[in-house]
Amino acid sequence: MSDTKDPYAPLRNRLFLAIWIAALASNVGTWIQSVGEKWLMGELTRSPLLMSLIETGATLPMLALSMPGGAIADIVDRRKLLLFTQTWMLLVAAAMAVLSALHLVTPGILIAMSLLLGVGGALNAPAWGATVPDLVPRDQIPAGVALNSAGFNVSRAVGPALGGLIVGALGATWAFALNAVSFLGVVWVLKAWKRQPVPTDLPAERFSAAMKVGLRYTRHRRVLQIILLRGGGFVFFGGIIFGLLPTLAIHRLHMGSVAFGLLLGCIGTGAVGATFILPRIRERFGANTLLGLFTSLFALGLLTLAFLQYLVPVVLALLICGMGWLSVLSTYNTGVQLSVPSWVRARALGVYITVWGGAMALGAAFWGWVGEHWGLRVAFAASSLGLLAVQALTGRLRIQALDEPMDLSPHRLQPHAEAPIHPDEGPILTVMEYLVPQEQKTPFKLAMREVRRIRIRDGAVRWSLFQDLAGPAPGVLRFIESFLSSSWGEHLRQHHRATVEDREAIGRAYALAEDGQPRIRHLVAAWDEPSSILDRILE
Image 1 (cartoon, rainbow, N blue to C red):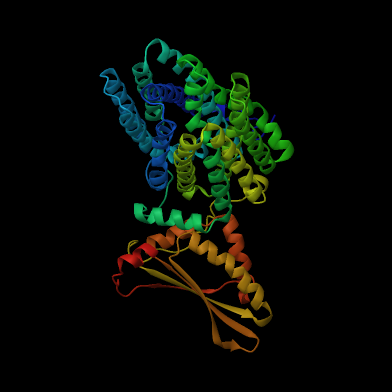
Image 2 (image 1 turned 60 degrees about the horizontal axis):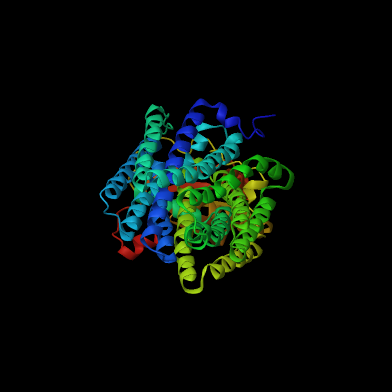
């Protein structure tokens, strides 16, 4: 079997294997702690809303911090960022163990500490997800992403079962302490990783500029928007299973801590099972068909939880939901990795995780409220129908990168000679003059729509296209394209961001002009006119 189709090929990479094992151990610790948190909350209150707010606390930071985390991960050494976030989560878990040992835990403290852990997770996730292409070849990225998801879900199968045993035998304090210890392996492997920085002759990108470019890129990248829309809808309705399952298990099925942990482990067991069949299904039916199939299966599992609240049907439903959760979200994650170039990958993952975390946090609070006012049956049934509605409305929006290879490798063209200005000088106005035959007017204007999208997506602040009313010669039209960059350094970065696919699109517009190349000028602002706060926000 070739490496492209071998789902275990990345594990032959020693560094990937070491990081994968360390992450697996850490995730087991996280799930052990999750059982401790939810079991302790179940002892303190019977409120479905308070129980769901633990999930909200854990995921809400993703809404605010994943995008900044992605921007930071794209402009600093990702290894150092990961070391910081892992150490942060280690300290929070240790603090929870101390508070629990001193019997100082209340529902409010549980929610607050889950929020602090979520802060570390939100900053960690984009950088962690963006490391896969740093560790494996491009043709192994889908397998690497799937293995990361599989490792997470192996921990989801093993961790809750261990958590139930530990909480039942030793108490929640030990669950929190073991989670703190589990971060040590990741920290050790990250310190041993000698990550090679990507060489560049460009000045360091500033955080605020990196944030703006990331948001602008998302706004003008339709394939990424499709993933965000479909993924956010799936998580909002499907995430109910993590918010309300503890209430169902503890207060409806009257389970002890060990049985509760084993029940949570059913989701991970189903996810692990999915890893063995995913490559064959993708190869036979395609990834977009897979999304529809497993979204429908997940909705069926939620419907089962709504109307058959007995142990055997619940276990079967959770196995199905686990398969669906891994299959759908690992496919969306792969879609993001394959739909964006390397320079913006962590920021794109940050936006994806922001949408994912926001949908999970808001969904957990919403479904907890529905469960408290109308009962668990109504909540699970409504979420199942909502999931089917999302699939019906968005299923036609196919994710291009999952079906067609996209050449997002950098177009290595040296755009400029040495310039006698500092990289921070600006703004820079680029003016391009095209001489276009009269009969090519309409095709040229259509081709320039794609050029506009690329310029703005890659960092241009403003873009315009004008036609000179006084043509240079009979039958020939003069068009002037202009776009504004915030500085000379940012303009150079735009050249480095262009992919082979982008250059082909721009080349199609150039080919419609005489000589196949416009006349290009670069103008630097004569003075820096101060702008209002509103202008800065809109830029």
